[in-house]
Length: 507
Image 1 (spheres, rainbow, N blue to C red):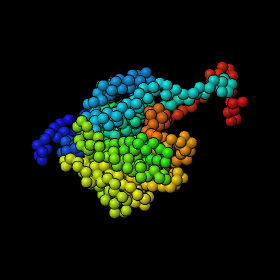
Image 2 (cartoon, helix red, strand yellow):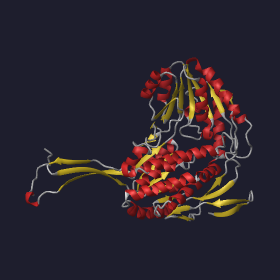
Image 3 (cartoon, one colour):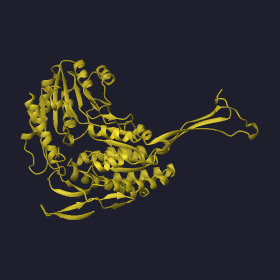
Image 4 (cartoon, rainbow, N blue to C red):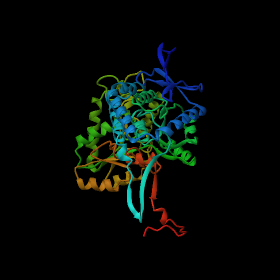
């Protein structure tokens, strides 16, 4: 990466490259985007925005690499994945520092993100077992039938800014293990982590071209969605973009899984342990400044539990420190951009104007003036017609909605257009079991605030939180990045061969 000087700050600015055919490649389009340190607001880098012709060249390189990689043995693939896993494990601190510098999340959160991504790599190391097919001997007289799964070729991942390591690892680990070449289009807001991953893949022994990084904006995205040699696309981001990705990709004959937005609820029953619920909700609502698709953004207080719950949550917020993510003792870092911070602050103002009770106002808190900081906001008496309830805010704003009964709370959650994840806090096993059966979402936590599945299950929501019929990573990820084939074979004595125009029978 080349370095220049930002004339506004006289600080070095890094020029970030693409990664094509196992090496850094400078951008050639002439278009770029700035990269900032959200904790200071300073421009720290510049990232190229690829043209459609640059994307085409990168995909062609990946396609050539895919032809050889698909014929590699499962043992070789597993060996590369094990080596990648070890490198990722030993160099976690370096990668976490990169994430914090460009995203802003606290170092412990960045380390946690990498650890969850690492779980997906560990799952993918079992590819020799995961790709085992079935075999039926003597399905008919002298006939055996067996199934196999084969790679698709070149697949693409379009990933968001909020998890610049974990989400790419949700995709690329399984895709590569299955024998595909993988083209990553990361967020242009925090692109450097993707290059670090690329270098680790190369060091692990992955052949050049099997993992590619192309930076860009809509032009690059459209080029991937339209490219004849891209067989499948995985996406995580907002619902409008997820819908666009799904519609354009499938119109071009591609397999697409597009994960969209969320409005995750926590249903708190009157018998819940309030202190435990408050700890969990604060952690899930304000961690990573609320910039998580699995953040709890709505607490649904049932019956008389509302006052105690709001009091417990509000008592915890002054004890939390907002500051640069790299500083020891910081609990919550900045938001990703100045524009996004201002947008989130606008939602707080809109909630107050609509009649919500502002219990804690993040706009008034003592936070660093440099950077893109906003304090934690707690809104009570929120109603479903308010924008703070309807919209995915993606910031440190928690809304409390009060309902009279479990049934009313369940109906509220099930009416919501988003259905990513939800949680229930209760001591009643029967109520929890009923909730997991009746709630219409893809992921459920029972006294667990962020129910992100472990790597050997699969991640994904329902309704407007998912476009496509396949969830991400885990067993469904293996299915997504492969296609099935059934082989029917026999080895008869040539003397028994004859012409038979009837439909084949097994009896």
